[in-house]
Length: 261
Image (cartoon, rainbow, N blue to C red; front, side, top):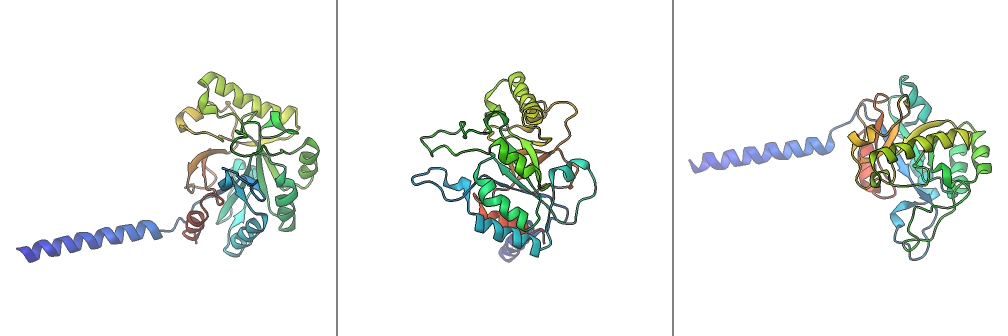
């Protein structure tokens, strides 16, 4: 009887181990990945936000790795169109609209002829990231209107909106938050003359996808980035997209991409 019990325990343990191995190694044959980046360059001395920073050389290495392993960077417009995507699509998203993007990242994108999306707070163009607490890190300059126009000419960059001043929409009542989202998209289009191809809830410490869905204006069909982490299932068919932050969790992101092999 003891032998039977031990056999049963070993069998259960083996099945559990097999299940864990399957979960860890399972492929995601239809996954769309959104790789989200924030600040390019070297963090200031004493920064408490070092995980928001990434180096341009590391980004270029990632770009080469993606191409080598069959991934195809796609644009926001491509996602919004609903047309068939390449076999292994990936969206490169840059959140914040930092000026370091144009000096450090944009030349790499041009060199490799790679599309990307920049999500920026329309009311803070030409200024700095006023939403950030300067006690955690010195403020960083944001893109200027002149720089936006220059990048627009390349045809490589699609534009998305953050909340107009980088506010966290989860801190506002629903009606006020919805107004901020509408105003952000409106300003991007009318003030900056850029087509709003997407929106990003960032930052969003207490994000709820059901509440967020009520904030998006009727008729807006662009992809919406969320702070939820992970790959996205059926490509090109989902309005709300999960994201991965290579700078914050490099090994976890590389592992997730490897499983898409």
